[in-house]
Image (cartoon, rainbow, N blue to C red; front, side, top):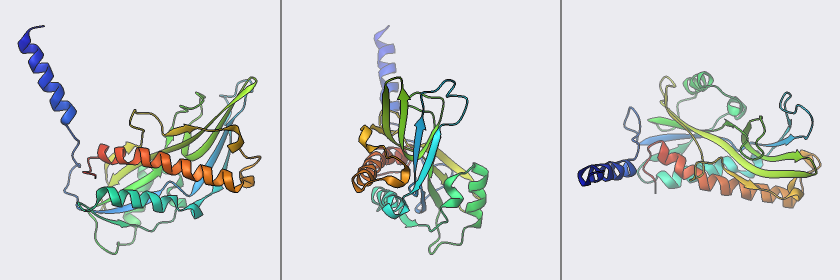
Length: 237
């Protein structure tokens, strides 16, 4: 390789490394935040049985909206984006966003009441469905949850936060951008968990188990949300 070619390649590398995505299609200074990831906790159990990939895993949900995770998500967004952007939380019916498609999101956005102050875009933080990077099963993970996979003679546990950021224009509900929230190394936000964290049923969580899950969810969101905002092109603190 010639010296000239090496210099050109180095220059291109520096340019690409310094490149930051720009906010798409429009100037955005005011944002309505719709946080809809933290109202439920999924308990997903993949049993060690023949042909486990054919049927669905054991999955139960626990209502955790009282833990204020969506409020914490909104606060993280506001802290990261201020003072460059004006951020306001948007009140929603969480069940409308628990299971979604891009078509349903567009409809919900068009039907939203006019916010207190006009916004240039809505930023939605939603449950997302991703492949099982914890136990390697054929079953997806979604939202906030505790995972268990049984192997012959052992179990594998993990806490996960599988969610997505969707940026939408307010008039017609058009999709401006969409990014999965990932850890800095590109992995699903997850942590190993101890076996004692798994309850007998989702309604039998002890105070310690509940507090541990809450702290782990916030840790994963704090580690993944800032990077997802940058991936959307936001200038963050």
